[in-house]
Length: 481
Image (cartoon, rainbow, N blue to C red):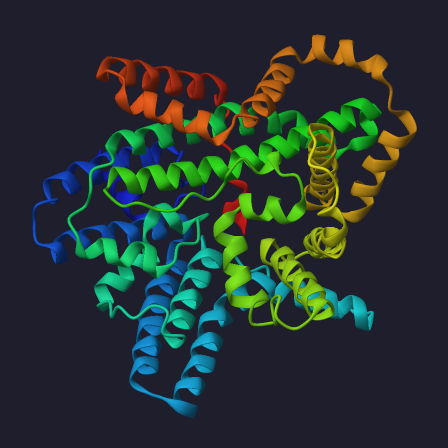
């Protein structure tokens, strides 16, 4: 038993995450002590959480977790220097801070990509470095950058202590896959007594588990087979694989966001929502206001607006929009397919902005809204093909196979052969069609329900998750970014 505990404390775990059994056991122990410390001095409570944050990072990344406290220390120190200086010293410190903050991300995430791309350009072979990606490096880097820039712009004027900033940058629910949280959202809450949001937090945790384990992981089984070997399946099955991934990535990532926000709520901290029924969007601009809100607003505030935003004419706006989406694509992964995915969204956004003056004159009828939604959904789904495919050849093979061999004759045999999969896919999309007010009513009904109802729903959720995840829970898609 002693050896088992020692290994748990000292060995990194590749399966570590918010839905792993090991984390669940560790969190229950952590949370029990956290509840005992809620009335203790604020500094003691924060130290306890920061220590668990670092333990969480170590389990996920091993020794590479040292980058996280180093980033916290350096980022906080640079921001303090920026506060004390004006003029060229202030600007120089900002530039130096950004270089220091971005360098680990650029090295670990893009060094191999740069070497391979340069090798293809020069028609030579460079040996890849095969670097391991520290867990959550994209997310905590973007949080550090947003804090530094907000201090420079005097948008965030509160002066957090190093302990408060370390809590903010290392907060474990946000570490592996966000949502990217601004200092102005979390740090002020650290100076107040944690506000109990236990039932809201429990609701979001259960919703996240259902999305991730019951929907995303189950749908992913068939989806993965289609994208691995599209030629082995009919055109209809290929289309179902694409539709499956469209639902999978939403449920996987929004499920993580729900669990992260719910975990924070259990601890008494309120974070902003990260998804708002994105597949209900009627244009791409609306889609990016609903999808991964934390990332889209980060790129808007720290890249698109500095590039000129909407202030310097239409051509400058189009260029800024396209560049921003290329950067967003590259952020998702070191691959030209992600760049292509970003370019598709950049082109779509530019086209929408260019046509918007004319579209404003189109009558706002139910048919117009339906066609707008359908066109947006189909375009987003088409772009997901390049996001998910292992290479460009696979993406084009899948598209060609659908175009050449698609037939509705496969519908009935497919549903008979994959009844549960088809039901989950259909139910997932139908539930995504809920209006925000209906979703809010469901959440409020859960919060107001008797404790016995909450207990039974919790048991049912975990039973469903255990029944479906007998092969283990797949890693979150966005954890790799």
